[in-house]
Amino acid sequence: MIDTQQMQSLAARMTEAEVKGRSPWADARRRFRRNKAAMISLVVLILVALFAIFGNSIAAWSNEEMDFEVMGNAATMGMPSFANGHYFGTDDLGRDLFSRTVQGTQVSLMVGLIGAGIAVIVGTLYGATAGYVGGRTDAIMMRTVDILLAIPYMFVLILLLVIFGRSMSMLFLGIGLISWLEMSRIVRGQTLSLKNREFIEAARATGVPGWKIIIRHIVPNLLGVVAVYATLLVPLMILSESFISFLGLGVQEPLTSWGALISEGAGTMNYGTLWQLIFPLFFFCITLFAFFFVGDGLRDALDPKDR
Amino acid sequence: MFGFILRRLAVAIPTLLLLIVLSFLLMHAAPGGPFTQERALPPQIIANLNAKYGLDEPLWRQIVNYVWGIVAHFDFGPSFVYPDRTVNQIIAAGFPVTLTYGGIAFVAAVVVGVSLGVTAAIRQNTWVDYLAVGTSIGAQVLPNFVMAPILVLVFTLWLGWLPGGGWGGPIFWIMPVVALSTSFMASIARITRSSMLEVLGSNHIRTARAKGLSESKVILRHALKPALLPVISYLGPAFVTMITGSVVVDIYFSTGGIGRSFVDSALNRDYAVMMGITILVGALTILFSLVVDVLYAWIDPKIRY
Image 1: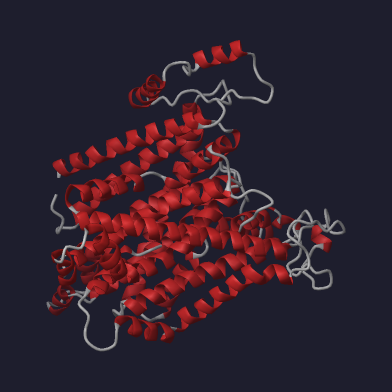
Image 2: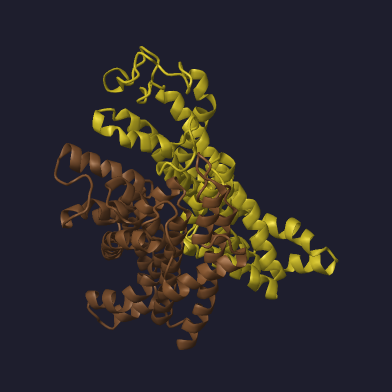
């Protein structure tokens, strides 16, 4: 959940005139380092990323081969052990859960980062353009966003996935299509308040073309808001993808993601194979937690209003 | 006020039409028709089927027919996979169920969330406050599709208190409602707490206290109304997410709501049912955000409409 009020307050703070002395960025860095929860979360995120990148070189089994000794017997023989190399146990088909979790982490993180990336690029440019140009263009552009936001996107996303086939690129496209809407609203709001500042006026007076003012003068000043919002957006993207994969409509085998693994684990938990649920769930929860804390920490560091 | 509602409707109706046309075009663009099967049917049968469902007419005609059917007769047409059932029948079978647990979950989330948030704000930095803040952070990473398996594991498999699925008397409602409402309850509690804290520090509350009002009167009469504004603006997005979450509830607890029909039709490629449900949900969302806007304008004296 992203609190719009706090985002607006942050936006207001980022457009305030700078006071002489330390730059706001240096200030923010110092405040962020003092925030224990955010720093720990950052370490957790780095560890999860390392797990996703290097996990496969530790794994004793690949994510596709089946351990035929365990297959069909996961409840009694597939439990986590170091002896047979299944550190996290196996799933019902005898596949190694450790390497499956590594793969799921890679896919989920990628979905989160790419979704947030699309939101950053499209949302920033769209919002900055609407806010800077203003007038009728602005009204039409923002009304379009209003209309798109009123559509139940999860249903449309599933419709898209069913009609055009379930593939990674379709998933990215679908998640990217909706992720930028809120971002463009926030960016527009801040652009409106930046627009009338002296340095923009100076740029306009010296004849800098409009698109160049947006890219060179507006966008860099949006960085704080965009960074915070993007950090808070990553877990939301991961949640969306996991939701679809949980329903069995997301990524397809042999690919997997946290949502798909949680769904599998939840389906077999009656048979005493709890580890199939717990390991993916653990990574899912700590990563979401960490992203939320880092995002909150970033916001507090950039907007040190006492809450 | 009347003009304000009219102006909002002027946006809502084109949005809905756009949603209908868009999903129709999406369906039309899908590779393969609704009658594509592994064993190719003779062309004559295909032609007859197309004629029966009106698929042989030009595209604009089909769109007009479809939109007209929905707007004038509330008729979403026949299901493509089950020839003996219409989309209306499928929706009518599941919708009351979704409405029952969805409605209860929504009311529970608002009532419990607001009370928790207000209590946490009044007793700031006590155990109530820490409990409220702690659960709201925890619930953020426990979405409904994680809550549902955990609830079943604890209350059905370990304790054996509640049925793990199905639909019947109130005992079947408990777990769907809890799974659906927890994260909203937490979000609402968090929003209420922070806005209540802000309101409690404002000048008009100091005035109210200074003139000797009782604490309960200060909270209920002067602080609650402005503190609820952010909560009301959150209700719109909450409604959308909740209706999306009902899909998980339907799948996991086999409650038989429209979420189940939606996922089944997605797996069967029954486009007519998918479109029908998407449009229904879209219409509900638009209607609900309209209600929220009107409510907001009514409560907040600063809004001029």
